[in-house]
Length: 214
Image (cartoon, rainbow, N blue to C red):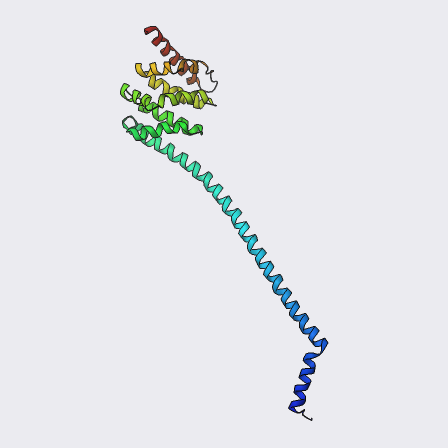
């Protein structure tokens, strides 16, 4: 077989490289490759954005779930603390714990309000401590709690704490002057908690005694 000279091979290579069909085929492959690169890049970018979107939604869901669990955990901690500390040391707690108990009455959740009122009722074991609750604003907050209560369970706990305070003449006088008679009188009987009517009647009788003493 005859071998072509080197110069002939080079000439043939130039003609082939400049052939329109070859160029078209080559360019089409390049363009096609470019399109593939662009398409693949777009898909990767879209996939990345989509993944970030899913992650953001997952993060939000996790945060919401954690918030709910943390909320219930916080409630359980408060309940446990109130149960453990309350019966043993609440009558002897300092001003910080007393203020924390009063602060619970500001929380919108009725559960926290009831816990705060329960703590104050256990704290008010003598006239000095009862007046301490009055001086720190606890008596007024209990009246606000009673007036704004939406359920009998919350009303019962507020009335119970007010009963504990009313054993002090000074505290009872403060409650009377603060309009407690009208607030307590407006409370209706409870079909679920008989204590509501019992506490209500006791408080009204206490305020009546104060009026007679004056």
